[in-house]
Amino acid sequence: MAEEICRMSDDIDGDEIIIRKKKAPEQRAGVTAASVLKTAAEALEALRAKRPLVQCMTNTVSSNFTANALLALGATSVVVEDLGEASQFTSSADSILVNVGTVTKPQADTMRAAVSRANSLGRPWALDPAGVGALPLRTFTVKELMRRFPSIIRGNASEIAFLAGAETAGRGVESTISSDEVMQAAPRLAGVTRAAVLVSGAVDYVAAEGAPLVAVANGSPLMARVNGVGSVQGAVAAAFLGTLGGRARWESALAASLVVSVAGELAVAKGKTLGAFPAAFIDALDAITSDDLVKHGKVKVG
View 1 (cartoon, rainbow, N blue to C red):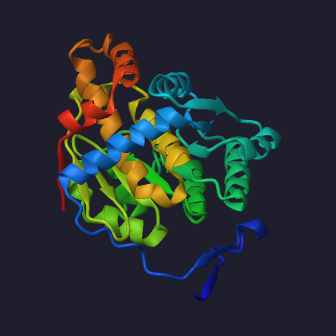
View 2 (view 1 turned 120 degrees about the vertical axis):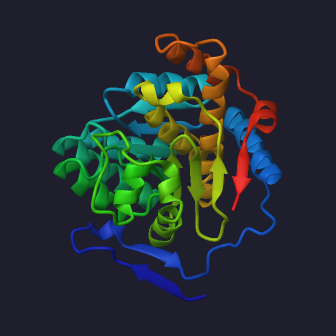
View 3 (view 1 turned 180 degrees about the vertical axis):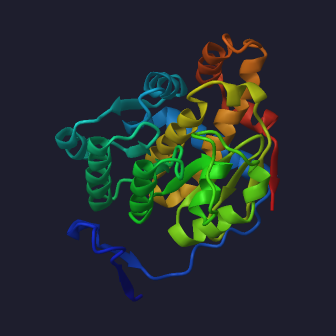
């Protein structure tokens, strides 16, 4: 089978020349709501058995909440910001999270170095383009990172719409449109980037080449009012990549969507107020089981 050498841009280092097999994307036949729930349930069991280590370059506002959420779920994490340490630590991590929510120029350099190292080692990584389109540094950084083959791109509807070509962005890190409005844009972005695209919202959508669009309708309105829940979803997606591997990007995105949204739904039963919800959400991630995903998951395929 012929090989394709993809040089994405002249400003990318030599080690960013990715050699990829030229082949049609795998077509997933017979995907049903039941099979999606089974896939997510098996992924959760695998994560807890492996305890993947996620290298987090993430939003400083929510880094502690994210780290606690990963620990509660069964993964581990290290937050790395130093340029020299980031590329060194990548060899020890199972996967990487890149979240540009509070990105600075030094952090952008760190992210590029870690992603470059991850690609050379075959480590999968997830990109959370928080607030892309709102400010120039994060927008430039995200557009550059998108050319470096993320396995999953996770964002709200405004962020995904912007990356897919819309001229307007969200209000800071808040979406100004519903996830339903980017149902068609998400598969297009997945086709261009070869990443699985996870759109968060009142209904989550997961798109990937060769796979039907999947809607996940779990969750709670409180989740949108608590800072860091979106960052947690990106980190959980990275944890599933570290468990299942970069080729299972669609499965990892589905599992992340279901685990976070079902946990949020279960958390409301114990944390009904805005102040109580964050602690209840961490507890729900700790307690959630594969049976919970199958029992409570609300999934629509196609």
